[in-house]
Length: 355
Ligand SMILES: [Zn+2]
Image (cartoon, rainbow, N blue to C red; front, side, top):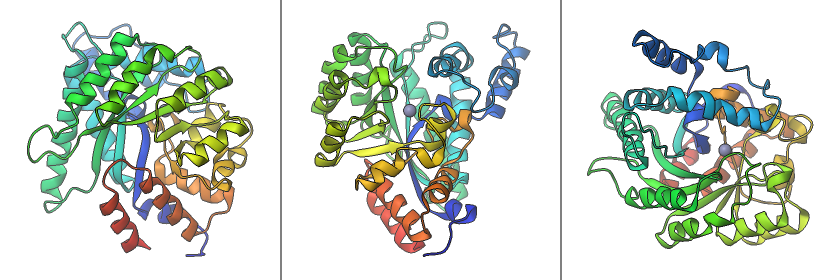
């Protein structure tokens, strides 16, 4: 357990992924095949080939240009039932192949007027895709679910309160299993989106409703200096999140609040370093600060389709740049599981068997 950590070890490690966005997790090859199918049907003719439209990871000069690839490209390509299913299933397969055993996949419900898809229908389509994939794996793998996958619904910062309420209502309606025998549920809600869009206080009633209905809460927190004012961060604490995403620009007096409330941190090394949300290299990442402060940390990929760093590689990067032994990496995997909203018992058992 004190051996140096290598790629094979991180791959074998049973991992929980708690911070992954569905649209950002779609592989470029998948986007390319969806684009080709649409081109053949004379659809999306004005959209450039994704192999050209999506730049290599690290080539997005600003955080705004990063968000534009979703609004101006990926959302436009994934705009019907077939594309949503065709994008979702390979995402699950990629996490499974990487040794992820538990996944909380987040997605922002979208209304797509052409095919008449509203927020509820969008979530239904994603859930159907998850269950279709689950069923195929279940029969392929001697009646065992290899990957326990659930959903988190995201409220975008740019939404109106009415839209935020609608997302929460859809989340509440999807807390139960789709039907007996299904394996995935909506476990919570998230606040996401371009951090330069402020303020967010108008969305507070939506998160209050989510909390009252028993949903868990996570929020993208202190991602950029603009979204790290005391006013915004204190507002977000008032929403009672049990986890915080990124948590980059947190002032010292609020680090103590995170510690005292035992809030877990969802930290995404490659995303932050490659999109220049953090200064310096991997060794300068605030992962070290939160870890030294004894906080619960869950490594995540954020957008593996964009940054092309699988969760096993995130564990390897943490081990390499922060000098973690095998035993410490297992401890890190346990820390992520302790912050998960379901499946803890099964995951802890898998880790016990592993270590
Ligand atoms: Zn994120």
